[in-house]
Length: 170
Image 1 (cartoon, one colour):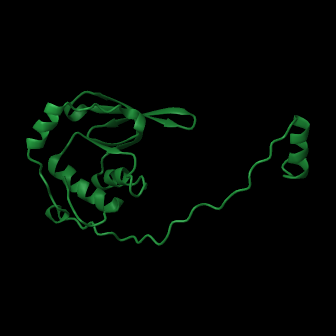
Image 2 (cartoon, rainbow, N blue to C red):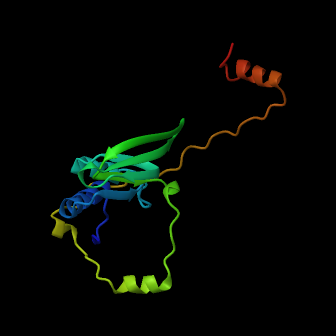
Image 3 (cartoon, rainbow, N blue to C red):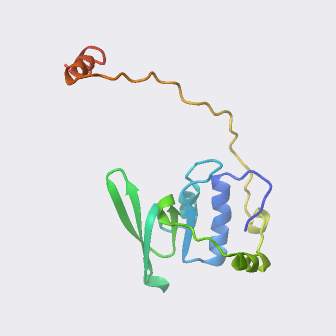
């Protein structure tokens, strides 16, 4: 658990996570696809670049085989044309899609046991990383409003509008 009062952007989070990966040497690092606050979809990719580990993004299914130095993970993700599956050597970084898993709900006794377990809390300074934001959000604007579409009653009317109004066919 890394705790800070500062606003942390994607690169700062990736640097902190890279230090933890270096310290703990996990076989697999799983992150969400994107952060709820910035919606950037960058941290997982930056973490992979900083650690030099292979990455699978937007995972909707995973399959792990082998262990130790010869472990592999197959990551399946949805793309426009269907599904894409890649195989990575472990250790690896995987970012997940909502379809990957249905969360389990913890039972009350398990929640109470978890509350009693110590939580290793570190600060960015403990990890030797600077997480201060280097990006200033200037403004957010909604997209320009578009004109509503036109319903047509027949194929002939559609062809006429495409020829004479939109001028996309001749």
